[in-house]
Image (tube, helix red, strand yellow):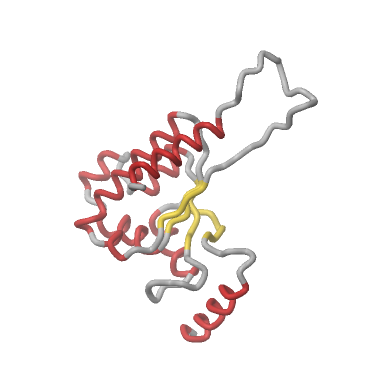
Length: 172
């Protein structure tokens, strides 16, 4: 499956989940229960995201994705890893920011399209020396719209907590 196909699949799934079917009734019936869904996604920590030669391509794809979700009224929660945040901080040019209201793409999609931004790290499988605190700090440098939530922790995977604990002892 190509990235474009996957992107379209995710958007269409999000659109379908957000559309309320018209049954002709004026409200919920006793037989149905309304379900609220917030699609989520994350940007992993590939080093290529922080390389300015590559950054523009991924930035543009993120803008297309955010605009499409917004067009259909789909709420979205985006968890971003260190490298893409670093790209947004170091690779944004005045020309790029002219397209996004004078700010970087992450700050723009959060403020204009109401996309929730969380820090993301992959449960102790970090590619570099950064930990959750580093990711959250950098996210705060990129946008004031970042939450205090962390993404990437798998609630029922004990091995992850062993990796995180081992990693914290090595960093300290």
